Image (cartoon, rainbow, N blue to C red):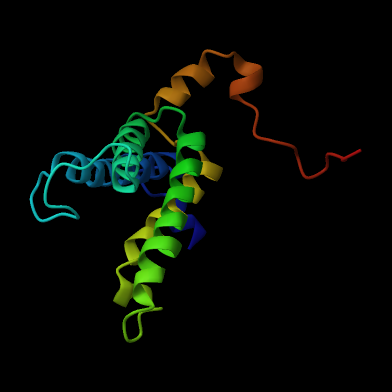
Length: 159
């Protein structure tokens, strides 16, 4: 199986970059829908106040999604967005679901996408941006010592 994976025409870094790009584009749509009401059929019927909970979520989704698409400050932005999605699940979806039959289940309370986004963002926060990112442009200009650093080796000793 490993031999087959190694012969694929793309790298893990490339797939990570695609995951970041697609996730960022999808997340940006949620922000656009919350802030501008387009496309219709979203969470709200009209303009939202920017200083409301929904407005703050829309700003995070729009700017965070764009940042992820660009691969700009990927790890930090993804960590913040993971927190936003954890908050959205527990304080919006789960709490609303307590009023429904079987509402504790994410498929019933509508929180399944929030959970999925949360864990994809956590993965991006740990794994980094992958290919085709602004982060990689800054890292490669830092010199070979920094750009080739892969973390401590298994034989490194912690003092």
